[in-house]
Image (cartoon, rainbow, N blue to C red; front, side, top):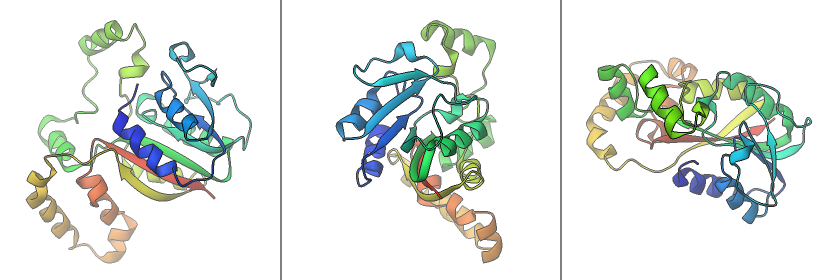
Amino acid sequence: MGHYAIYDRVEKILGPETRGRLLDVPAGEGALALRLREMGFDVACCDLYPQIFKVDDTEIRSGDLDKTLPYSEAEFDHVVCVEGLEHIENPTNAIREFSRVLRHGGNLVISVPNIMNIEERLKWLFAGYTSHFKPLSSEVREQVATEYGGIEEVALHVNPIGYSEVRFLLETNGFELESVHVDKRKRNAVLFLPLVGLIRLVALFSSPAKRAARWTNELNADEVLLGGNTLIFKARKI
């Protein structure tokens, strides 16, 4: 139920990693789980609505990312959470749970909408919201409920979370951020290069120490500022 460009990137990220037990949460209908299983991972799946899962011969459990996941400590070598954190009330709890169920040295791959790319920054400036997090009026919620059979959580983005928030949650819950990726490059990114250059130039007026402390260079890196619709993080439990 996610975007296939994200699945493609997750495959590339995990491709070089040693195979092992992997948790896919939220699993949706199971498209990513099927890919990961074919890559040789021992895949277990979890979702708030396990009844929508469609992959045979793959474990699926009912679980809520806002609560305790139905797994033991250090049970997995890898955890993948694609298009999940923006749909829940408490991403902090989810990251904490990922740390709990991962073994030492295990990999975490998570995705969030890229609310910090230049196009979204401009939309926020002129409209007051980004394309990923539109106002959730009663009309919008009624439309979603009709289209998704009353399962709002599948479609509604309720928690704007970007690079800074994700990195903070990772570092405060025992993870080291190893790399940041995008689903795919935006075709019109070149149109914004003059403005991007100006943003980076203004940033240079801050001292190197302040830029390092505020992750200025990271926030203005190509992956974030010129990247696609989705940021994908790879972190390791330390």
